[in-house]
Length: 353
Image 1 (cartoon, one colour):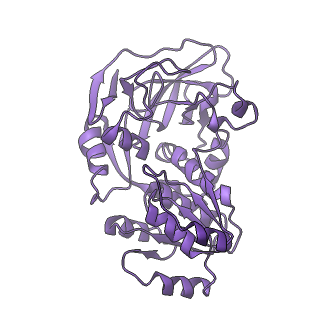
Image 2 (spheres, one colour; image 1 turned 45 degrees about the horizontal axis):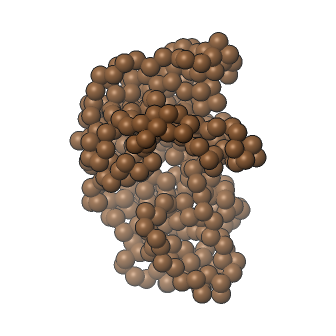
């Protein structure tokens, strides 16, 4: 089969590799349909390997090279003898986390914090940028007719965004600030709106992303570098500050904006991953009685809920998709375009089969 294989920094190769096969009775063989390129994939491509294993992974035993891709939809082509949740022909969305089920975190329902956490497409035998992939039964969730294959490929980042918002809680009528208009930022804005936020203000200095964000029609989109944010906050919140901030830029300015413009006793979700230490005004954090909540991944049991919400039309996750490319073009039209700081793409999907 054909697969996009990651060897190291700036080294992804489209190769012919041996077809994977089911080895255990609780496994499912799938044919990936559409696969997204994640920010984690981009970090690996630019400065990796980071989380892709250069020595045998403690849970999966794999090392580089790795077939990339952990945001994908697929069609089931074979099931193990013990599999009951899905059948051949089902369309599914993939929950890529691979967990041990034995550590304290797993045993207390926090599988996303598994001590031996692995991930399909990053630290596993297969990935969504290959024409076949093997998964455990718990990693696949059936897509109803109302959810397309394209939407199915966006369920994973949609779960990331939803978890961050859920960590700080949105109540009907809340006014929310989202810093960073990338895919996770926009999915967070869509989810906050689905939960009843009255207005969502989206902040991003990239004019291309800001222009794309405006097409969502969720609320005001602002450039934090233009000044005038104080007046905007006073106008929208009557000077009280935002009820909640979802920080999705992974930058010090984004986090500082949350501290500055969130209301007293408000909450900030740190959803964007910081690749360098952030500097904050800790005194203001105390003076305002603020809470900053970190988020890692998602609840691994959340796929059916997010799929139902997408099926209802209330969480239109497909809106973040900006282009669809072929597997042979995944480097030139995918990775290289997305790492361009002046790029105009948001979520690029690869059509795998």
